[in-house]
Image 1 (cartoon, one colour):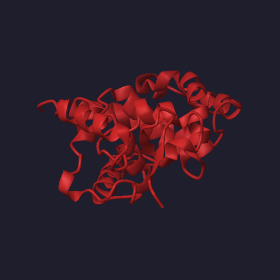
Image 2 (tube, helix red, strand yellow):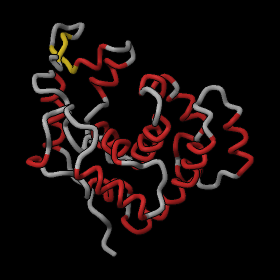
Image 3 (spheres, one colour):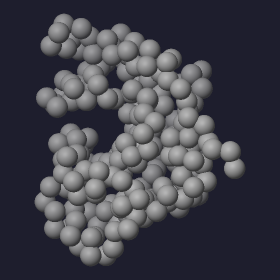
Image 4 (cartoon, helix red, strand yellow):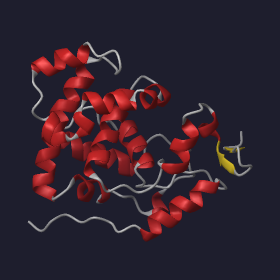
Length: 206
């Protein structure tokens, strides 16, 4: 089955972006473009954790509610959440009310603070796991990779939760650590250009 479909402007795009109305803008303006903003990186990893067992459409539709509930995914604020906040969030119908996933976000916020203290930024740590181009498979043909397995293991070793290899691979696809747009997709070349011009962050000297 072809991985492409014509978009509303007649240009070919990844087939998945036509499966829900809200996917087109996400595909065209977010997915695969390189990100260095720590808050966005933390948000995406948290939302991928919430997606586990659900669809990305469900999470994307609730993203505004998640941002409101978790203070814009400012991990310095989320790390101060208490058991009372967990109970509050479990009553919030606008998000996914899963105790384990909610508690994992709060737990991971503290791990994010530790990671920033040791590496200077989340971005420096995550981008240090960018795979070599030669190690990549055909776009959208895998759900894990050696790089996602390695990053998952590194995060788990640091105490992070809900960061399995599949979750991490989806995070890497979305945040631009790989360009997984299908060959021939009109956005693939735009992402490639953005990645070529992208200045990779480096860890602060210890």
